[in-house]
Image (cartoon, rainbow, N blue to C red):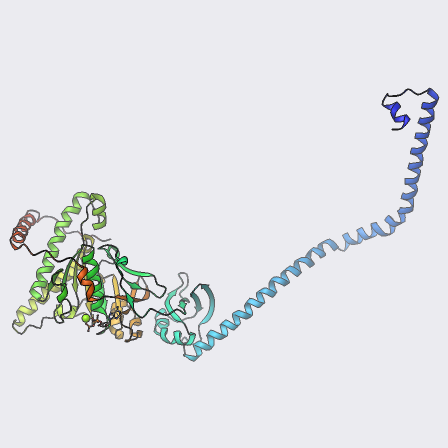
Length: 469
Ligand SMILES: Nc1ncnc2c1ncn2[C@@H]1O[C@H](COP(=O)(O)OP(=O)(O)OP(=O)(O)O)[C@@H](O)[C@H]1O
Ligand SMILES: [Mg+2]
């Protein structure tokens, strides 16, 4: 530390002369510093005047900062445009690819325009491709088979966009439908939800009777209707449900005879429909007591395990047209009318009470099942069939495109959509797993039905209400 600083801190004492001399040299030093700085500034002045200031002025006047910023932004946009252009080029390739494919199969609208490629989304095995066109959904569906060939893929479903009917989505996959599916008991759910098979992605397809109310099965001979009936019968009986099977020609259900009621006669069918009507009345009273809307609601509210009833008619045509040479025409007409009437009101009124119909037919025309009754069958499935049958069952001729060699292959209608499904194969050995039917207690039955009739008469004033789900 310098002497002067030690003095300033009060650590040493200096004489007056010494102090003055130090003060003076300090003053001199500061002056010299100032002079030097002024000198340097003067020297630098031309640099400020002739370079720094004009550069700054020019920068301001010519908006150089702003232009540099703009240049950077232009470069960024150029990169974006380049990547967009690359995407557009690959889109053009897609556009060309699909246009060529549509040209090959002659798939165009009335003005001769082919559908325009819109977008593609990939998710593992699935590719959803959308197109814009003026073609209707049924025109797309009718071309499904050709589309699959020309695009070399499987079209799983064809749907509209919600916002625009011009945009159609094809759900596609290279995966193939399974040829044969074995049933496994692990698929069993309960007596109201019956799995039937799998779609192309291996998803379990099932009928939930709380929603479908009744099921209509269509298809040409040898498609797999009876096998499906048997698969459903198996599940219903395994789950403890009640089942009545009606068949009039074939002997496909003999093995079920000691497992559930099997009917071969039209008189018995009428009696069964009446019995189901009584069961419905009985359930109506029970449900009313706890204000239950349907069987699931009733079971939930009361903690009981009321089981569903099912009436299966394998070939509806034979149930609705009696071919008995021993009956007079009048008797036949009357019985046919009664059965049709009971089926009509049953389909409309029973399902909420857990009483369902599963009807199958090769030709579902009005003679066999009239429109109003048919509307109560929300569950629809159709094996390979002629266009007319497919149209009636599915409201689309999509099932006519199925291959008759693909046994157990069908289309199921889900809302406005269709799903191809491979039905689990029922094998006769499965019947051995079903419990045997209890021997009928004839006397007890008569007493019960009499009691029931009396009960019914007491409540004749009950108004029939249509319970819809
Ligand atoms: N889910 C299935 N998986 C594999 N094969 C099946 C399946 N369903 C049926 N089949 C085969 O197809 C044949 C015909 O099936 P099914 O008897 O069920 O047809 P159908 O539609 O009832 O015919 P029909 O109208 O003549 O009564 C069966 O014998 C069986 O070999
Ligand atoms: Mg059959």
